[in-house]
Length: 471
Ligand SMILES: Nc1ncnc2c1ncn2[C@@H]1O[C@H](COP(=O)(O)OP(=O)(O)O)[C@@H](O)[C@H]1O
Ligand SMILES: [Mg+2]
Image (cartoon, rainbow, N blue to C red; front, side, top):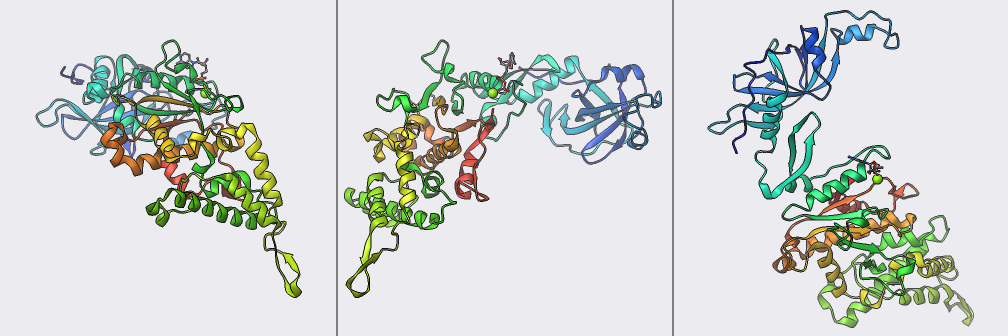
């Protein structure tokens, strides 16, 4: 359908360019009645250098004073200050360039002003059929299978707001507002619309379990639903229960949970724990004969290992005596230094709230399980439509929520990145990065002695992945 072209021939200008800087334009309005028609947020078309070109700007401020200097001279608190009649202007910010004709094709709009407006150029309010025509240009190039129908423009209820779903979800975006302003509602409505796209690939990190009603098994639900296992799910996990075993955590993430940095022995504890984890991972790889991995793994590599082996090693070191002088034993280098760390490890691993990390079912201790997990989140069985996945974190204890969210995002990112080529042959959606939708409000990044608990590397990685929305 050809898009209508904006035309201002039958409509007198509302004003003329009075002053310009690189971003903003001040429009002088002669007619008091015309000024009353303009609202903040309206669009103004300013005649460009040629008859075919208009510079588009958004009204930021409407005033009946001639200049900023006069405003400054008046006391803003004094409502009785004289308001000079007949001197009125609009301040608008330049956003783009509209061409009535672009080469041989029809109208076009691009961001950025091709040139700055010239003094005295005519300015038109974009309204009615012109507004609909303009909004039509914004959406004309979006292919129908990628058209994310967002709703209608507040300034023109007749014009549909359509974004390019592909481009929208592959960029970073934020939804900001005070409590109750409708952020969660907006996210839910975006998800519903995204679900009508041909290839939505979205992971929603749901901190409060507020999107559980979008699960497929609910009325009108359409999303795959997973929930990080709570204390009640440990003995009999449900099909949607999600475990994130401790072996997925890197050294810093484990230490952020287990180490008390105010303990005098914290550096010793961190060092010994790291050494034992490395040994436990090596033993596991040797047992499985994974020579290639053995040559390149680090303490941070996600390799299933037995935490019990690490704990036994800590206890042994904590109690070990070594031969001293005169045939008498003396205390070993770690003697008594690991006791408090062992108690913390015991407390954490026994706490059922942390069960999804430390008491996962046996089948989670394998690479095959990790691949299944990735396939679950990054593809679908028939792979036509990866779809929308809700991950409910509502039962994760708040103190470890940032770590858990970042581990989960990092694992998916790494698997997707490293296995992209091999898995993409089988699952087309592995070739496409998913979009992560997350809530920032309840997620302060914990800091330990001025340092974030997460390494800057993992924050950077996750930052580039977990981005788009914070609801
Ligand atoms: N566009 C809307 N239309 C109708 N009701 C809305 C809309 N946006 C929000 N609400 C309602 O307002 C209330 C608060 O919205 P919510 O999305 O929970 O806010 P937030 O997440 O910003 O705290 C909810 O009851 C929601 O149903
Ligand atoms: Mg909310």
